Image 1 (tube, rainbow, N blue to C red):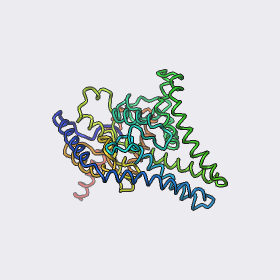
Image 2 (image 1 turned 120 degrees about the horizontal axis):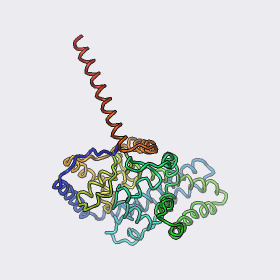
Image 3 (image 1 turned 90 degrees about the vertical axis):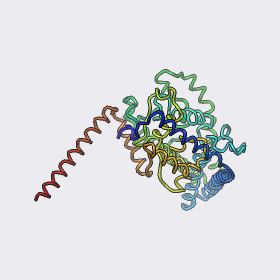
Image 4 (image 1 turned 30 degrees about the horizontal axis):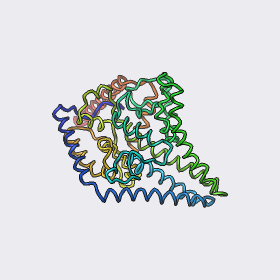
Length: 387
């Protein structure tokens, strides 16, 4: 694996034309927003509410295994959809045009440990502005993982697989702490006093979420305390692992690229679009996959058009892919199994001190080996024909 681009280089004129076509697509889509999109997001919110009620009610009868399983699954689904299709998309301002105060991106508070204000800064601003720019986008490894050869190797990255597993299980909690950038304590770029101050709103949100799932609902369940608390815990695990998987598949697959900070100098709109394209990955699948991923199965479109309602990404992706093909740009997409397998390979490979030079050397070795095999096959075919 490497991060060598599969896209061809474009001239300045082509880059500008590429950007203009994508701008036109966004403008065309935004001009058609209306009742369909409004009904959709209200439907999503109702789905979250009803599955939450159904899940928690079923857990109240959790002494019967079928009710525990159904309740845990429903609650897990509710948490996933609330975080990904409702909270994440609403906080991007995708539904601000509706003028509904309950769906305003700047004030929406979602049902997870990470505070909405911290998320709007670390994700909406930092990540979407500086997508995959090394030294700017903290989402590249979240401060604990090495996923690209351009990241300097340190002995701590030997724990890549273990840290990735911990991230997957505790994703809502680790995301809540992401804004602290705790690794800066080691480099002395931050002080403990700064961290303590920044922890105040984070601890408040953590306390609220912990109280709801592990104190309030288990206590009102009375004799069903144990089934409810274990069901809530398992539902959170389901949500954490699914969210981790979708986000990592959208950013850290084999063909995803990172960029030096110099790309930001006088970056044009077309160049910004190219960076979003080359730093993102899509997942193939049907309506259920798109819904359960918050339409982040169309991560390319989301990075290009973060304020466009996610439910429009599927239709936009057809045009985006066609535009990319005309300009010779690689459109990174694949099944969940395919994309996630390359993420896992990255996690293991770059736990070791491989560099970009090592990748290039490995590619040369593979190419030479392939050439030798081809020559042998050709020789065998000639011998066979001669015989």
